[in-house]
Image (cartoon, rainbow, N blue to C red; front, side):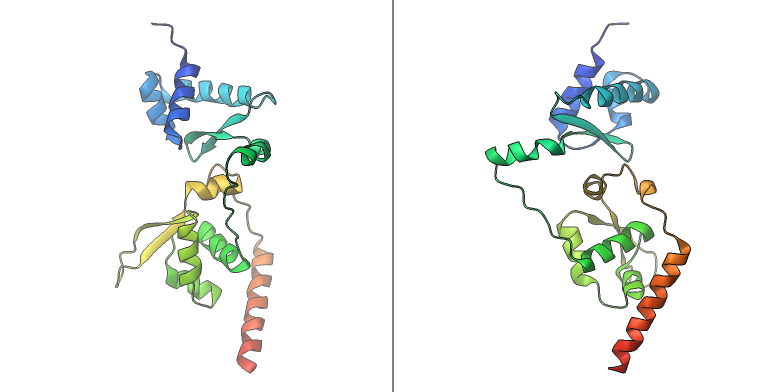
Length: 189
């Protein structure tokens, strides 16, 4: 077997692609199986944790991406324009959390949970690339289904939606009761 520098090849792939690359594709490119490839990438991830290196490799739902370490941002903004930060209002965060925990989900289902229209919120989340259309529900009217994106995972620092915090059923019931009480107050006005 030819002695290849797998780390250099993987580094070149991740740097050049600029976005996440699935483990299977990396393994195919370097002619190794997924298990061996994953071990090499995990070793690289540990190496990149050194404080003398300004980039890191992150895993996003079975894919890998090379990114700048967040502690380097203050230096980058001196060179480039400061990246636009999207403001997530309470309404957007509430809608995003419903989508994250219930995906795939339709706008009607989101509205049923929130009790109000969600068109603007869902459109903003799609614009911010935190949510995307996943297809259509096989039901009358064929409503769109929404789910989270890789950008959502990156933004919230999780590798997959399985890493989201588990909701406490007692707390969920308290939230429901508060929402119902708030709805009754609005109806009484």
